[in-house]
Image (tube, rainbow, N blue to C red; front, top):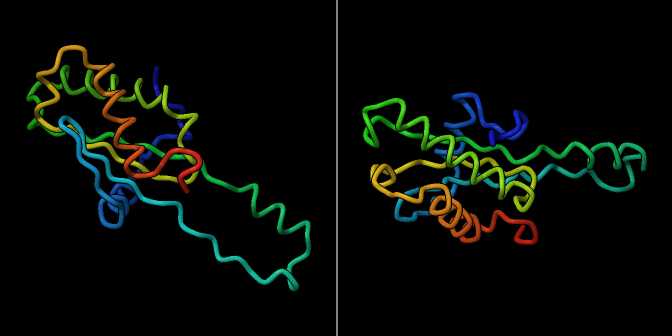
Length: 140
């Protein structure tokens, strides 16, 4: 299952921001770069009417996810694309648990091309990495 468009990290600038400012977590086949949602500057309560406060809290961006896989993993695009689809499918299952506003990039290591039961392995590793980075709901 593919990730919904609102949950995809697309632009080069977004990827660079995550690489530059995000925290790093490592597993045997994947590396996670996670960038916390930026805290919105909250004006004082006296100067802003109640209707404006409720509008600003509704504009929470969903979590955005990018997958980076280099030719070091495999020279064959077929293999790289299959791995990318399997990681996206694993993320699709974890998406309801992820807190909104996070920007995540998963880097696939060359060892990932060698594993057999790929989707289940990726699901376990991603869950472990997301727990370490405190990305799940309730860890913010």
